[in-house]
Image (tube, rainbow, N blue to C red):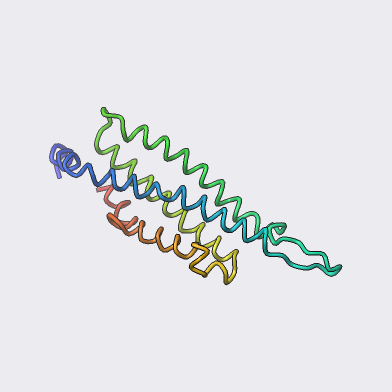
Length: 161
């Protein structure tokens, strides 16, 4: 598609990029909520040592690291989001840049959120599967978000055409 036609096309579908930004942004609160849920579970669930003392499973590195990693990712993703929004709302920004920023934001956020949700669910054992604990629901929501407005792979390919 010649440059002028592509630019005109991007101007005509600018609301798609807005939706891509908005839907990708769901990764931040989803990670914060799931980190909180997994941390609460990990503080409540205990194991007993050979002396009969109870220890929360959060005291184990294998439990603590994935939870803190997901929480840290949520803060990094919030910074990415803030930067992307500033670029995106700049009225002088090229529409191609806006679409690129929106696509990158959605791809990065949703992929990180999906991976973290699965890991956090695994850290909660069978309770991670219970609907009341919200982890599988949020994982499914992130999966649906990845597919909405074009699956992440297609969005990534679309950027390079």
